[in-house]
Image 1 (cartoon, rainbow, N blue to C red):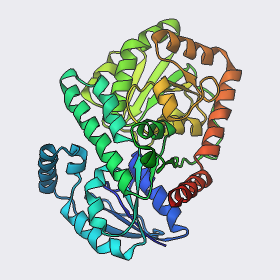
Image 2 (tube, rainbow, N blue to C red):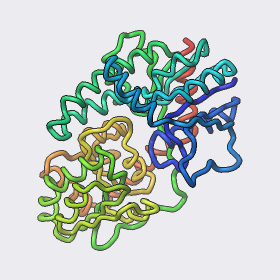
Image 3 (cartoon, rainbow, N blue to C red):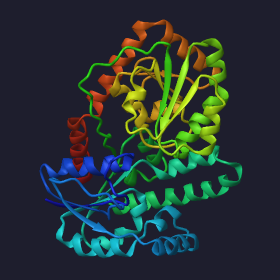
Length: 390
């Protein structure tokens, strides 16, 4: 089968979830099919790796087109996210390449306007996560003056996701939480097209390391992304003072790219906390932590930081929202905390109970091995295909 995959972001190096997903899906499908990956042109100084198992075509995004697309979306009622990524060169490439393909894959609802450019070629959509859910959650916690606009965009995104899935042969998401949320807001016919295809995560060969002394907590991720910036600043304000008062020996590492000014100020004002700005590799700052923190209140899809901690052999403490995104079972795969008192208790349990730490490490790594291996992704994608044909 000849498969055309179109994405809105250049995928190398794969630092974000959508970039990781694009390469994983393209590589997996290329094992059995003739795959073409269509991406934006590389940024200055970047180039795709040699020896790709699939064909690679590019298009050149235009800032003028993005601005015009935003204006059209605002006037027409379409989500701004879709207008921002409506690109003439992408439309031309799809119109040329799609007739040569048996199936097309559009990544994210951002490419919804380009479904028309596929002509008669059937397509599936890899939503990855529900952007409608993402914006709906953000509208609860972002700056007050932004909330009405975010809520409006969430409503428009929901309409766009429903319409895109309705037109498609099927749709994939990485999280059961997102699939269920979107399915509840769709007709039964549209909901039946939704299936979960997990994000693939590699398990490192090295055994998990012993906890550092003195004990340390870790928060890792893109610190310029609202979901992470909101999570760490809110947690530092509401939970860290109580946790540190109960356990004054504790340290905290906050590591990631593009920390916002608010994140910088929050970490600087927190006793015992350090900020590691844009490290080349997050893994060394995660390894050795007594726990990895996932205190997110917003966001959609699967929280990659939870999967990375499980793979690294680090116990996880997460909010109920983050735990649901990772399908983590409270007390079995991770600990769950929401209030400051619950965070104090969860950290205290890990500090005092080595057997609990080992159980959580084993369960977390088992969760990744069983649910996020290449074989698991392959099986889920095949099942999704069978469901769509049915």
